[in-house]
Length: 208
Image (cartoon, rainbow, N blue to C red; front, top):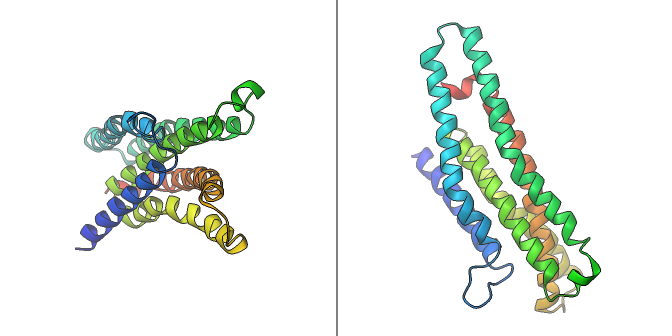
């Protein structure tokens, strides 16, 4: 029952984070919002990634009778797993920096910065989803739930502070705060996800 509730918490957190990035910047002409495009590409890759990790762990358990050799296998698997989670964080962080360093000509286009930040949000959320599903697969459901809901919490805190400081601010001003706050929150969540994943994949007890 507790596993069922935890799994529901993971799903609710992921759904909330998806709705958050979905509404950041709307798509033009019926196209999907830009933040969702990296997610649509990443979902099947995440399934393959988590399946590969689980299969590799099971193969090591069946292959190695020696405890030391099995643990070496797990360390190698852990290093590869973390390496696979690094690109979304690196790409998302690079897009976040680039959004505030756009060339002058590009920055004059309407919503150019918002577009780049929105894509960054989608990339970072994809990495967070990969870490969340991996943690759930390894039985770390509480960590998975906390990671799933973290993007919402990280985005809500600065927005709440802005609402208190600027009670009469308009919707456009709120969006200007919400968008970078969400991307920064997703970047922080990705770092937490890497730390939680490292603790999990390098701990032999996670594979029992």
